[in-house]
Image (cartoon, rainbow, N blue to C red; front, side):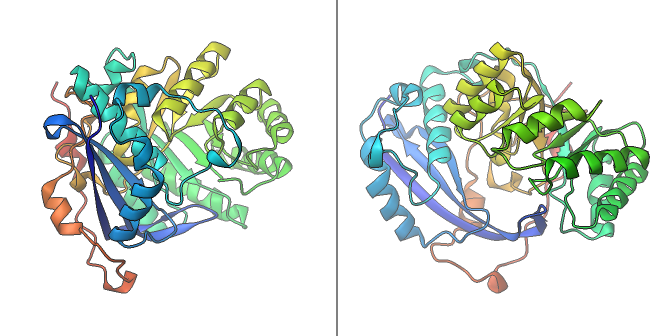
Length: 383
């Protein structure tokens, strides 16, 4: 199937809460839906997401895409594109001016899977078994009351594993949040923490020891220190006792390979471009490292999680995007399923396209209120 056209829809709306971690935070959504179109108006969908910087006007997004991305896509066979691996050579290989790369991968794989009539997870080699999912709050900037309400909701929806943001300058605040979580979801829950590189290796060990003494068993610590400090990460891995080290989120394929070869993590955290994730996921399996799927837009990463051989968990972070598509992925009893439809299964809602279409940048003060969160009960998979 050849790519014959494309469509870009810029959308912007307020979030229902401020999300973020020890380093960053944001209260609005700025995304662009990228639809690559094949013969017969078959559409492959991807999402361009700019978390902490404004997307330009839709005309400018289109201009940049047409100049930087479209020449390599127009008229190309999508089956060849999804498997193509480019060698880095000088200035011709560089990131695009806007973050199109992941959206292009999503749209191309969606289109290719539709062409062969298979769900994406099956095309990638998956058996269809669901994946364990954990509730991630992106909660660093929430008040205690907001924090408790979020995780109480998650527990009520059947989640039994929870990840919170840590890395506050006052470690007592992190320990306080762990206490709130235990009180909210119960002492038998699986608890992960994510420091987003806030600590040094020694701070990591000190923080985990303080947390254990306060009565908190931590299943994994995620990205505790700088991503390229493989020596420090390896030191942490061998000194943290029963807690696992989960790292790699911020590294490209080359960096992830170095992380694995350095034996500087227990688990490899991946998300991003589908082809790259599959490549590094296969290597991780070959080397015996479990893989965890971090945040992907609308949990499209479930297709990769089902297909890769060593995936333990997928992240669900309550970002209130479900209204953007006709049918989100099914969730039940702490598990997530892929779609049985050809492609990745996500189809842009025409209602959402009209409601959130913002061709020009809108000031945060002028954005409408966030749409109501779709209750996850609407996503239950039939028994």
